[in-house]
Length: 479
Image (cartoon, rainbow, N blue to C red; front, top):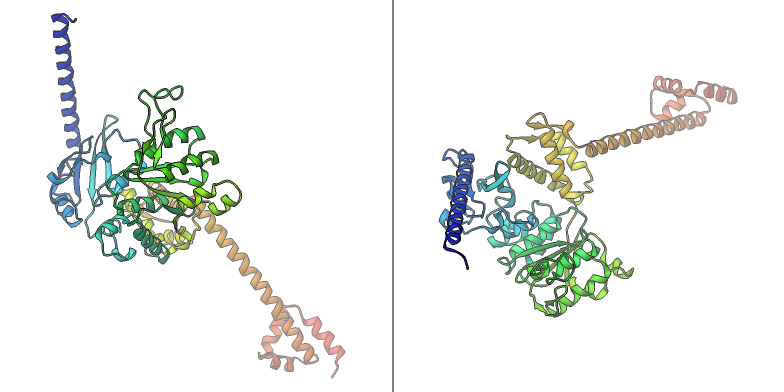
């Protein structure tokens, strides 16, 4: 039993700790408001909403209230529920987009820090009439009049036929619960498509859980997918760990790079898909799960099946239907739109003033092959923004890879022109020689055959060194 003195000491200590925590929270709230007061002023042209570290909205300016209504958001700040995705204890930033309300985009969020500690988040809402296609999605681009669907795929920018067809198919398939395989080169935006399908689906209020099957060892991937029980192995957490498959219950599980999944792990996934239940490592009790599966790969899975690297039964289980996402070089007309959007995002992210891409830069970006696709373009634009010494970004700020390809293309064109010129020279010389021979060395007749003046023929004889050949023909055909 505790003595009365000890109990009093514990109560006093707890009270002091509580007071210090309250004071610290008030101090951080003060710094949060102090550091964003300019953005929250009524004179700001941006709509801004300030969130505390737990994702609760605490203040907004008048412009934000107007923009919220235009974008289909809550009519006032009091109607905005806590946004858990903004909580500081979040680890999985990849799923941020799927956890945000449909009227909010990840690139509008800016963390606020003080003394090296993140103390909140500032949401900057662009005007609904701004140039950003993210702000005002084009419903016709996905062939829908449904605003929810349009906003679900708003982050997939571009007006090319290839992209519009892929997005339209994704919007249609989002209405069902079938498994979908997303195919395409690295960096084309397969996870963005997966987020869009989730947001447009009936399970949009459920979790979106992403796992990269190629980024982990076999052992880590096994525990990451299925979780483990307490004591399952050395170092296992007390109480065990929930796996990603279990965490996706009621929502969407996205398996990126599924073609990289080790062959001996594939039966485990197949059993989950067929039976709708999982077993944590070291546990004999099954757990029911219900989720929608989306998978992605840059590999040809049919070829992987034929060569024995991927199970045929799993292939047919996950590939009920598929969507091919076009690479960037197949839709060069979208490059300008994407580049300008990434530039705008970079300006906001780094707190810079207005920047523009020069016409030479746009031409170079449109001519480049983009092996890294949209991801490479985003990185290239951010690099140019940070290295440019002027608000007008010119060709000298282009990354070396893009400049190198420009020089290579130019050198190839110059070599091609030189070869063409040599070829034409050789052809013209041969035609002149044939005409002179046909005219038996008579230059007047030869000029008429060629359709040129006799004086012009003399110039070409000198250019091609044919004087001696003419003399020889005249000796052969005298008179």
